[in-house]
Length: 393
Image (cartoon, rainbow, N blue to C red):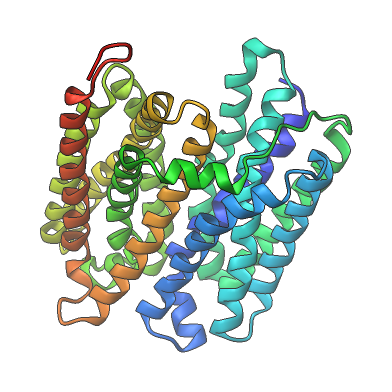
């Protein structure tokens, strides 16, 4: 693999870290800024919404810009956003800084995938894209726990300064290593994205993605306070537990892909059933340290095991119902993942501030996953009723 790919991998690592590290720092940020936990949870929602709505629009608007200058501009925006977060004197300015970082996130992965593919021969393109996204996976396993530890030891602002430094390293790497002559693919127009959203079949899968993936974030957003206030773990233990959760996520992502290869709908039905069951179980195991660790390992595995199946299913249906916009459908499903994070974190905040309280967040998350399961069953029925191509209705 060309060394230029490592610059993209480092950038993906920095972006993945800044997205999820806030989960481990919510109690620290809430205490420092004198806000409630539900308000702190909106920091997760706002970032995810920035990715959801910023990525499609900005990707279309920046289609005419050359690839290398665009990547450098995105990393500069990422650096500014995280530095502003570190310097934010108030909650409102922190939210604005997170939105800036989110805009860079969405467009980077859209553009970065095509650049990674262009850096290698055609028969190695999938491996190149996988290597870039490996930065995101490694960030979940190592960057988030390490960032949480830094924030708990030196203050949450130190974590954002560390991510800013990672962004600067990625910027230098892209400037020095990426060739100036990168091919520029035709950007997806906004009208193409609207056409995809006009397909009822694809909308069902986007809803499956948002509910199935977002259900876990009702509880995961508030995992640190759950572990400290309900389970009784010390603040310093949270970062170590996040390592366990991250490893489970990485394993789930790999095995989930293998499970979904033959029949994504059948795989998703089984995964959603297990995910909802584990979330309900977490409601009862949270007071026990040992049972909590076992439950979290299972939850981490299941929360990302459905990702490959959801992406594969969208591509399959897009080829059938929107054959000219498969890439657009895939990108919009990424937006649906982030919409799920936003809705899950927001709903979790409502639960925490309600009489149900912190302990009920896993159970409410399970309800969202059950809704995704119902949509999956419905979509499977529609698949069986579909008229094969070339046969009369």
